[in-house]
Length: 333
Image (tube, rainbow, N blue to C red; front, side, top):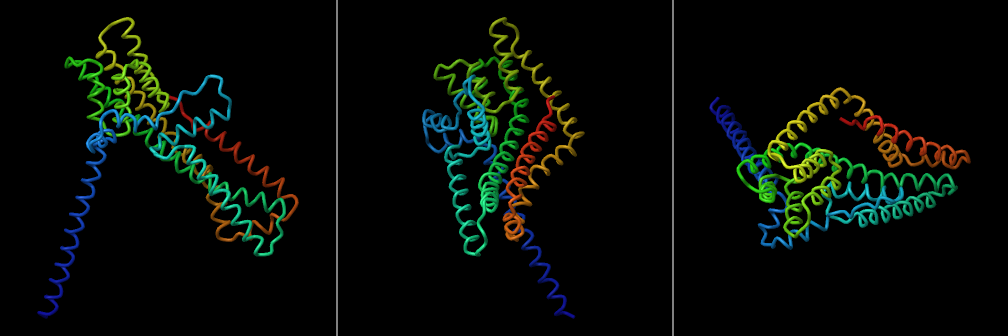
């Protein structure tokens, strides 16, 4: 009996030791992550010993050039891709990302074509079209979906931060700080992505840029109507005068009410938005996974002459369907 009690105490001691060690590790990791999040990237670079000029140069590498008004559809599509990559906080140049995707596409297509030829399967035009389709889905489709998802999360975070930033800005103005000092305060008090973005605005203003132009460029980079309203408020106040703190306080209330209405609309339309995401992602995921599990499921059918017409029509219908779904779930509040 005493041996059983000793074993029981040993097991309890082992359990307690593992529990307390795991809690200590989790607390340490979570604390470090919270500390890292609280300090935006601009402050981290400054803390590493770099000068403000060097930090500004590093951050400005991620900035986009303004899109010309007469830009064609190809230029607009590439600009939208650039903005998505920048919003996702991917340090790699968008051209390098496209180059890597293109190399992956060519390599996958060559590998699948070689394996198909090694298996002594007929290489028809339908098989080549199928190989190009699966290679494009893996090399372009999946990375772009992941980048877009990450960009949407950071853009949503930016929208959540902006009303808080306006409150800090208003309090700084009421305390007697000038606009430049109020913006500088945001660069130290706000987390990323808004902290580093306003740091860029502060640096541009310090180097002689117009505040309205710098904030307009920020709104254009993130495609945020809230910042555009902020820019309009600053422009009107500079031209007509008035209490800027009161104007921006009212704007913060409007933005919060608009965000509340937007969240209600999102809650009511959550089923439709989730269906849209599923109908966008599921065909690509199913197509890729089925091909990886059983490639002959497609290759045996791809030898049929009608496959070229059917597969092309299917891709066209998928693109039209995704476009229509995006239009239906793109809510404007």
